[in-house]
Amino acid sequence: MIYFVEGDILKTKAAALAHGVAPNDDCKSGLALALREQWPGMYGDLRHYYKTYHPKPGNLWIWSGVGGVRIVSLFTQEPAPEHSHGHPGKAHLEHVNHALRELAKLVETEKLTSLALPRLATGVGGLEWGDVKPLMEKHLGSLSTPVYVYEDYKPGIVAEEPGT
Image (cartoon, rainbow, N blue to C red; front, side):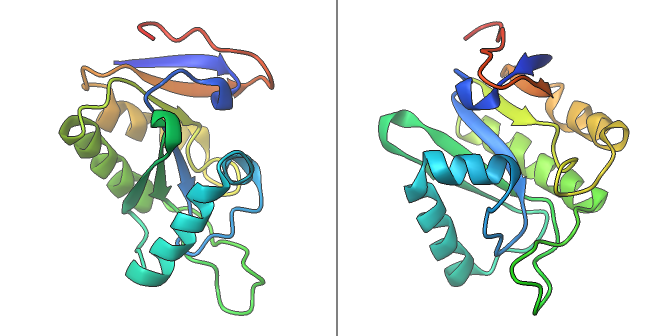
């Protein structure tokens, strides 16, 4: 079940937090930067994953940290073009669709008790929320796990997350 909430996703009580990135993303802006700053170990492990596995758009990677924190990186964007100084490419609905399908499988296989996501791929990714929202509803709406979509970002505000 999906709940559309407003607040600061970094204050979520959800069992896992998912966000969109590009393969080889330097995580220098938006939510990716905030996650990099809050959990520098996650970023180091993500960089190692990039170099070892060369992920493709549409896939995902999950990180488990100290204290039970779990971050799911959804590869919704194209990798940074060569000579672009690390600026990631744009997101594509096809990549979002594939990544969300993989995320739904992950929620079920890992038995995640709750999940928080932002308005996926609509910031740096450049997609329109009106195009992404139906994909989130399609892939995550039938899950029995509560899914909190942070539709409106309110810095420092704890969102009301039913069931947490």
